[in-house]
Image (cartoon, rainbow, N blue to C red; front, side):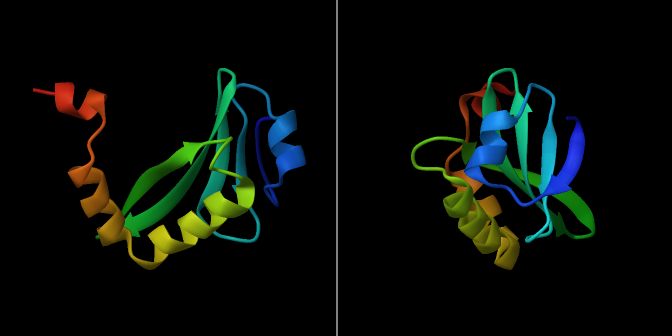
Length: 98
């Protein structure tokens, strides 16, 4: 399938193959990407004129397309709060950086 734009739904998520990237047509910046066998929801926002990609979470409980879309709207409304939350809760990969 590759990169394309469509409304992100459960049936669309189930058909994604590794390497696919779907941009949602109903909310700018919201997308789903399939890496290996898992699908992650992401949202792209502009902070200080720089694009920043936030990963919302992997498809499955609790992240359905509608829940992820709602979280994406929250992040787009206040990206600075999302950045503070990310700094407060770093991933293991971020902690391992020197």
